[in-house]
Image (cartoon, rainbow, N blue to C red):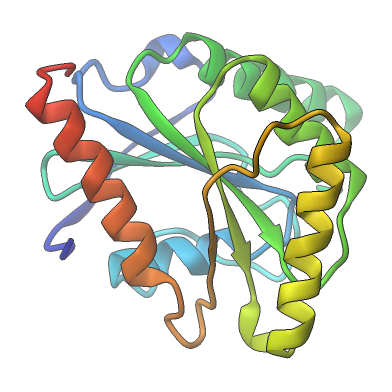
Length: 205
């Protein structure tokens, strides 16, 4: 898939105010400072479509971007570690949960994980929630340029082991990416394209 147009549409914290268009949506979420904004900018060929920041927790709303006029990329707040008040964080969690459980247009979520670190409990817990809620998702490992291929393989294997230990029958689809080097870009966009084709062919949207 080639991305020709990427337009910001709306930011809000109320799922009922999300776009009414019945187009497939792909939500991106992960721990704060996982490199989400950089990944979104890399995928869409825009240097500043999503706001990047050295401060974790920059994204604090549901952000919709219309891609190629026929699907939405949704940038969600990070879970955990953002330096915001407990009250704000509880609001985050509520509207994130509302989005995943109420948004019928959601075709797939991408859970971002920093490949540099070994399996983190908060990521495993979040993916368990997604699985238990029957929300389709893939894993995107970010920052692959920061460590060796051997470490990448061992860290992916560690996640597989953790997920099997948490009663997963199989590992969800996953992609290894680097925003700096463009690694994984074609694979992620091809996956989205395949899901879109299936949806449009089945007149599901």
